[in-house]
Amino acid sequence: MTDADDVARAVADAHRREWAFVLAATVRVAQDFDLAEECVQEAYAAALSAWRRDGVPAKPAAWLTTTAKRRAMDAIRRERTLRSKLPLLIELEGREGQEDQEAREGQQHHQDQADPEATVPDERLRLIFTCCHPALAQEAQLALTLRLVCGLSTPDTARMLLVSESTMAARITRAKKKISAARIPFRVPRAAELPDRLGAVLGVVHLLFTAGHTAPSGPDLLRTELTDRALFLARTLRDLMPDEPEVRGLLALFLVTDTRRATRTDADGRLLRLEEQDRSQWDGEALAEAHELIVAGLRGGRAGRYLLQAAIASLYAQAPTYEETDWSQLVVLYDRLLAVWPSPTVALNRTVPLSMAQGPEKAFDAVAELEKDDRLARYPYLPAIKADLWRRLGRDAEATKAYRQALELTDNEAERAFLAGRAGETGPPVR
Amino acid sequence: MAQYAILLFDTAGAGDYTPEQQQASQRHAEDLIESGVLSSAYALDSVETATSVRGDAVTDGPFIDAKEVVAGFYVVEAPDLDAALELAKRNPAVQWGRGGIEVRPVVGSLPPSTR
Image (tube, rainbow over all chains, first blue to last red; front, side):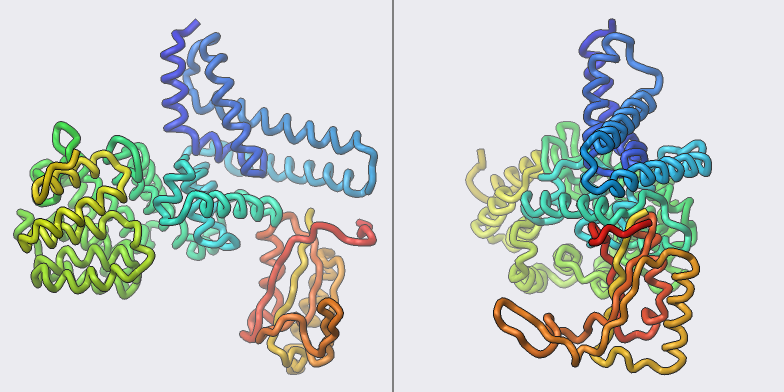
């Protein structure tokens, strides 16, 4: 017998690290997301008692995968038996089901042979590329990947994509239904198909990183298991498609962003702004690797959104001090980024270097323009940036009001504490 | 194997193909028949011949007023959507730049197709 606490911890750990891997492997057998998810859930539940009895296995992921796959196969077999025993209304349909199953198993066998040691990255990539099938709407691709590959909860996914929880749940259901009804296959696309799907895949990995970099909710600013997974996926993609400038850009962007990980909060978990962060702590090696990727990517021709974002992040990081940042060059890069990716959040971020290069008043005009955009109505960084501009102009009353607005919109505890602190500096303390 | 309906959409002048285009279509149809994936295929007369029924009302013209209309449809057998899309993309009409193709899974048919 193994201690119940140890087992609970091992299961929780395997849930955090291996969920996507176990699901990806199970989906290949089940050929159905809902069935696969159900079987994976059951496997985790079964692990609690089995591991208490037999001890935690050496390879928890393998144990969970085998268990979940077996459940999926049982379920398929049960359904087949049930169908054959039902009074045959249409005889042909029953037979078709069996042929189907045999064809499926044949295909499965073939896949296993072609890919005898399906490695973790391949399994995850397979699932990501399936979720990013061009037959699915991009919003569905994102929703599915975040939910299934990355294990993000539906509310977190909804918050990240700026839609309501019910909208998100409906999107996921619709996408799953299409995958099963239209039989969207579970495989990594051939090389020729990759460019079609790459945009979506990069978008998903990027959102995953974003979700980890600033968790949409919860006590901690960071969810390192998400950023680590995104970084790992970006490296895997770079190995798969080494010459794609946007893949290089994405990896570079993650490297630059992640190097600041340790300096974004102080010892007590309080948020530190870029100007307060200890630049000597940043990983010079990672920054150099990113710089090389960016230079190589920019040499390749027209820069896409990830490469430009990486160039922006790298420019921020290269300055010896915050004050010495090349603000005008940043505004230029942001303008180029807006040209290839006209996103309201990019336009909002642009107002920060703009305020440094040309003064807060100029930035205010830009922010005021963005306030008309409904998509930013619940975006906490809009009032937060506005508050900062007011603060710099010495307009404390307006700053306090805007900090409080931002406070109402964020659910991340570290961010809330920071905003409450700032609001307390310009106005009466916030409890 | 599953069945997919491939709906061919074209501008209202559908059918006014050049002799080369007609030959390409014919060859494509023969390819599908030879490879044994085609279940059935129908080419429709021009949209000017369409009549719509909505409730009690009978009107001249197509049911949906759009730039493109259904010019024909055929049903193929394919193991999954990717395979069906491969077949659909091979239709030469896709290259003509006037319309396009919609692929939809078939969930039932009457009488039951004998295979």
